[in-house]
Length: 127
Ligand code: SF4
Image (cartoon, rainbow, N blue to C red):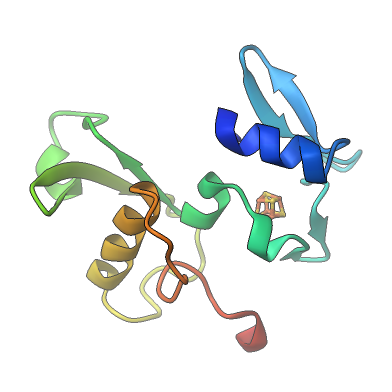
């Protein structure tokens, strides 16, 4: 999913890359069902990736998805409460530094603070 602000930037730089899904924009997929920016197993637009891609596998929300595990997902940053969920398909989970370091980075990205990803993604040179 590409936010409205990101969509207008994307359309300027990659006018062929988006399609509409209802009122939202998504990046097109190739005939094999992969994102059109994926080359091999890598993203070819590392520095232009939409926020959702930069955040993956984290899914921060302002409200919990479920009440029963809200406490587990809760993360507060400077008085703002977030509920951060993790896509367990990520093969890097549990293999790096403590996840709390990544959560602070996730929140900075969500808040629009320029952030050089250090804990939320693996450096390309390590792949
Ligand atoms: S990270 Fe890159 S290749 Fe993967 S979905 Fe996002 S834009 Fe496409």
